[in-house]
Amino acid sequence: MSCELCDPAGSDLASFACWRIFAARDQNYLGKCIIALRRHEEDFLALTEAERDEMWEAARAVRDALARRFAPDHFNYQVLGNSGRHVHMHLTPRYTSPREFGGITFTDDHWGTWPFPSEQALPEGFLKTLADAISRVMPPKGAAK
Image 1 (cartoon, rainbow, N blue to C red):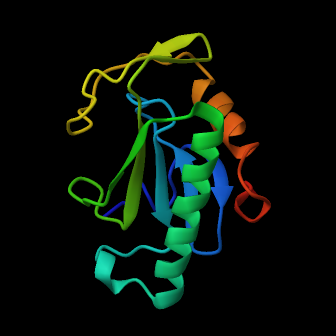
Image 2: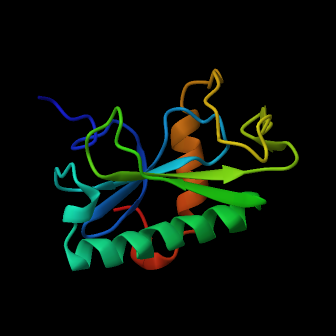
């Protein structure tokens, strides 16, 4: 069975010993990122103590970078594993008002509810531009490698 999170195609914005952080392909919420475990594991509770601790460090680093870059009003953290059976976390910034980036206006039409997916056409190179913008405000330990 192939696992797209073991070797994800995406724009890395930070790298940790146990975790990779990259911009989610579906930017239905500006700055949505995925924090993926570097080794294949399907059970969130099977993380080692070091992996668990570093996951919180990675999530905090990207949350703080997104706060500096886009000033979200709230964050959602989702660890589901329904379609991607690989330990990972979706970090989804939420906004009460529109945000613009890369010539695109992003609106959070579901503020106050579950972050529903929506289709948002992105221009070529958008995810790399987004990842670069976020990585520039990441702390040095979490900088892309």
